Image (cartoon, rainbow, N blue to C red; front, side):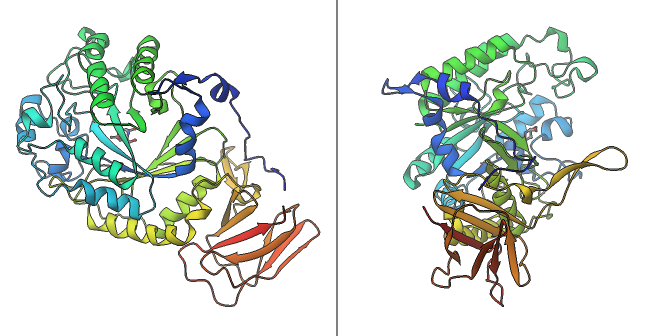
Length: 456
Ligand code: FHN
């Protein structure tokens, strides 16, 4: 068994593992490896984009392609947006329902947008008047209820926080060079050069991060977004604050300045695998927040294939839902998550706690096309994950007759489809190849998984 593909980059950042010492809430030292262990085993989480903007369902003045950037894309002055926030009253919001939907899908953690770019906190933020408690009709704290429901159902509660964009605060500039102000509220605060990030950092960021890390129990991940113009010193200070308040809390890379604990890829799955922790965050249709006009839903099979592809490359999938303004996760999302959950019920052992592929040739190889543009060719319609003495082969297409795999230098003692442990498959290992005879009729599964049990 050897890692022989050019695409599987073996990067072990020792710095990450050895130097990341800090003490836990119980004062015991925490190393980076233990801090990240649950995340590395979890593999699959729910991303939730929800806030005042969800009420509009993407529609404003007849335009239907708005989303969580509504205040900016619809050019809504802050006073009018705050007026709009007053009607935010998600009476159908049921934290237990949301968390159960995640759990039943086989997800292990949940990341909720505590404050998105509109600067509106969907929790009771003592340090800001631009929050659900002070502005909206809704007299409950959704974050508190979600944190409690996560605790109850054994799901890690995590929070998203828009770090370098805030369209309510007068001191948040964005962009450099020809992009100065490109993601700023220039309607209420037109002069970018007057904006002093440090004022916003002291007035809003640090107080709110302290609120989130002291008022909602254990926070699994602080999922920052769009760090924009935060300085290295400020990112360092913020990380120190988080390590002090919750040493076990994981911080994603969007704290800025390479100070995060893991890398994020958005709406893409890297071609290369990595041993460093990483996560792909992906939508189920074309939008993060609820957009009632968007029915471009991905198929459950394609989302399972994405999960498998990501785990086979050493990563996590953070799959997004955009609940409505009333607080309901759209039925097309719930239906798809339920089918993914059915698949995880049978095949979850080939995902959770697994290591990346032992092969690599299935990921294809890089080549330059006639215009010199790099592309990946020769991908095979299967992926592999491993756990101890088992290799799991995930079939994206049903092979006709037999499946030929690369060298496996240990004897395959047994091979069967997950869900069918007593139907052993015929395996032949010779000339550097392992050949598995496929049953005549395909196994009924969106992505059938073969378990290969190897001799110790
Ligand atoms: O601008 C945001 C966007 O609204 C969304 O939250 C995504 C999720 O990762 N992050 C930013 C775009 O990179």
